[in-house]
Amino acid sequence: MEFTGQQSFGKFLIVWFGQLISTIGIGLTAFSLGVYAFEQTSTATAVALITLFTFLPNILLRPIGGVLADRYDRRTMMVIGDLGSATGLLFILAMIMTGNIEVWHIYVGVAFSSVFSAIQSPAYKASATDLLAKEQFSKGSGLLQLAESSKFLLSPIIAGILLTITSIEVILIINMFTFLIAILAVLVIRRSTKVDRDVREEKPWFTDLIEGWLEVTTNKGVLLLVIIISMVTFYLGFLETLIGPMILSFSDVKTLGMFQSISAIGMLISSLCIGIFTMTKKYASVLVIGLVMSGISFSLIGVSTNLYFIIFAGFLFLASLPFVNMSADVLVRNNIANDKQGRVWGIIGILSQLGFIVSYSLAGFLADRVFNPLLVEGGALSTTVGSVIGIGPGRGIALLFIIGGVFVVIMAVITSRLKPIKLLEHGMEMLPAEPVGLIQD
Figure 1: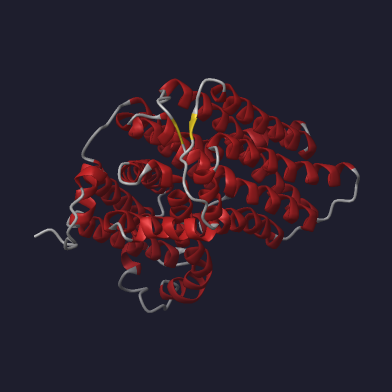
Figure 2: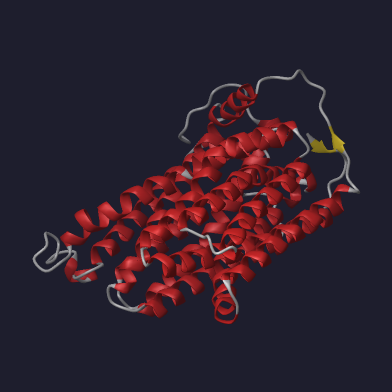
């Protein structure tokens, strides 16, 4: 399922702009519902559960969304996804306005929205391949990441202002209008594009899922890329969950907010640069360089308690990630047939996010039970490592960051030696039929 002869960067920008606006709206709601739930319950568990119910359905159902994106018109899938997501917010809004709201209503509403986001996301990713020429893939990837970073950079600031002058109900309505803008953007390009419908034997959906799985797992280069990105999300999950406890152990909430905002600016600038400047080769090299820079900066976050140094390291870390993501994104697009990209992105979506799930599960235990006890007064490493990075609350987390960054650099060195990754540079038509070894001689 693809747009025949309809590749146009202008049409891509129309769809991208609609999704940028809706992504900002999603960020507004995520921030505001977290604040609202905490104010209503005074528990962090309620906030954590909102995050869980927002995250899990999207990830677990994304492979099915990928199958739908390949079987049906991807533009229609995007519209259905946005409409369904808006419906979940409408349910929450109705409960609030009737005065019957309970925290479980919020869980149901965000989970419902997340289900439809799993339909929308693979269709959106695959449609970029439909609308872009190959030489535009890197620019498109940069813009996709720019839109994604907006919910971390712009949305919290906007939501914080809106919550001081208006209510959660208004923010939910604003988010629903942003979904409407995204839908209108898709409908605008729908008028000027045709869909090439492949005539093929109808097969069970599970067969399509298996095909998507095989596309990822039988292509050594693509599979290695997925493993690499999953490991990056693993360490990013540690940063998301543990940077707060580390910074708050010796500073305040204002400083934590400054770290998050300035770090997000790093991602924003890199994504913008990638979106402006066209790159058509050397993606594997950019991937390795990005991994090295992210590993070094991840370690630097933990080596000092100087706030300016930590903020600078966080900026560098998030600034390096778009180059990693862009390189992996383009290498996958160039090596997977367009009619299978929906289900492939669905499979990649769930596999690459496994790192988050594992790190979310392990972060608290590793910080509280393993690393922090090593660097308190009298801890096993207090007189050795502690003499360099300091001792006290949160310094064990710092050590975890340092070790994690070292492993990312090691992963980068290994990646630079992987022949299947280098072969992805040539695209599908150049891949050899014979099996190849993993390590470059």
